[in-house]
Image 1: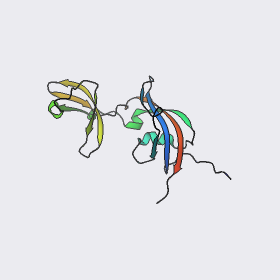
Image 2: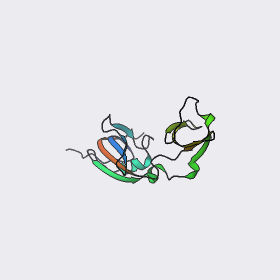
Image 3: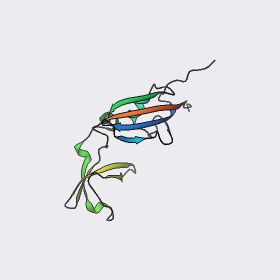
Image 4: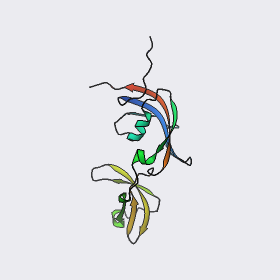
Length: 151
């Protein structure tokens, strides 16, 4: 007797291909031409909002899901736009508006910040997630689903 593979739940490991794109079709990231991504739901590999969109999908499913970047990555906040001293950047770093730089938080996490403006030895950096405030397309192809063993 064959058992039907259940859909994705909170207690499973998933292997998939995925792509994120903006409403205008600009592709932000994709694994479709690379190795697939394998992760366990809730391990922090993928944003919780993206994981929630996967719940219930079965192995072999191919879906295009439209999501709010605010719901997935958090709402934009003026508090996340900060003024930093030019001295805080390496002297050899050529800063340009629009440039995205990886910053390390005091807790050791890495967060992206986009340079908005450089003026009078001050650099304005936007620490909002770059996809916040956008409608995003989330394309997935589920390759494998494995239940996680209870410990």
